[in-house]
Image (cartoon, rainbow, N blue to C red; front, side, top):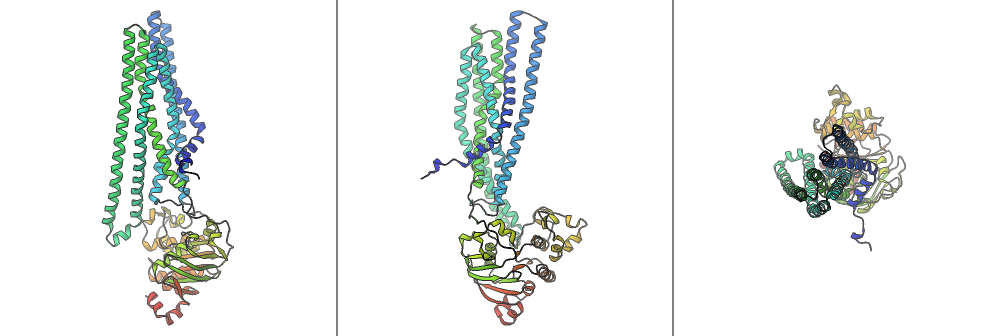
Length: 566
């Protein structure tokens, strides 16, 4: 039996993938940043050699010019290697972060939801902040290696002057890293908790924005704000905790580096005073003690960034490694097939059974809104077929045997609360830009008045969630998008609840005309749509209790008349 400890950690696998596909950029970045650190370290070494040479051979203009030229070469190397090295690493970092953002977004947009308990706001945080912090590993490794190069060069140079100086740098560096590696673990766990709390706050914001209008409607906005303030305060407290831990880490690292630099300086001074090293070597040692502070600082910060990248990678793995809720089949339904619901039991549906023939226009009058929502969810494959009793068939084939992509190409379920996206009327109606029936869809949904109202026409700008449109305009825009898709089977769930009665009557007639010859199901209590349908199914207490035309049901069924008459 395989235990959890034997499986590779998903976060570590993500980091390995990021490193593996950026090996070229990291190699060049490491070389250039290594040159930068070597040049920085070489500067005090060159100064020490110049002083030593001057004191030994006396004054010489040629030697002075040669020294200046050597320093110029070192400074040029430092400048150019830093410039091009960071350019390569930051380009690779940005590109890798973009790859992970796209991958997380693709998981969120897959037809089959993944089995992970995350809201949309949390997924958004993972696709942005966590993707960026995971990609930072691309810069961390080259900078870590280049800092190690600087420390080794300094240790070797000091060791050549006196072995005790070289050993002091090596032992001090190992001690500093040992102390800071222990502290970095606290940073990793604290950062992971902070990211989780920030993600929860982001999810709460997304929920509040989505339900802002209903909240205002029944006066729940203050309670909702209090709920958000609570999760936001938790995120703030955790952020303060992380900032404190980072502050202690940075302060400790700086103090330890300063102690090491001071120890090197004092030891070099004592050795020079004792005559064991020359004045030039003393100058070199003092200069290295100052310059080594930067690579030591960079070197000591790397464990912290590694732990942050690892924590972010673990959060990305929550999305990327989560299994699908269900495993769909691979079949494809035949075009123009019928729709059959056979004894489906789910939620408030109680072995509901009916069939819609190919090309038929059927309206379903659901007396309970919950039953209508459950039926729409089952047809939209938002509920996995293996989680409910009974079967849904398209052309005689069960949904479980069909691929979700094929089902969605053939069967389109337009919810009553269809999302409106930032862009234009045209991009909301035809996101892919491939529909040939946009004008017909606009006319059928009675969106023509919105188009005519603005001189830009279909290119009129729409704000996020349709903030600059009325409720009826948003609903008609969503309906136009569903009609423009021109699917074989179209299911509309309450498409005109925010539309006035006159417009609703016209929309119902237009939809019936436009969809003639193609299978259409409308789940609604609208008399206009019920009257336009070929037949009406009455869904009461989760089962179909009556079936006839709208007018016959009005004449013969008192309960139906009370439920749908306005």
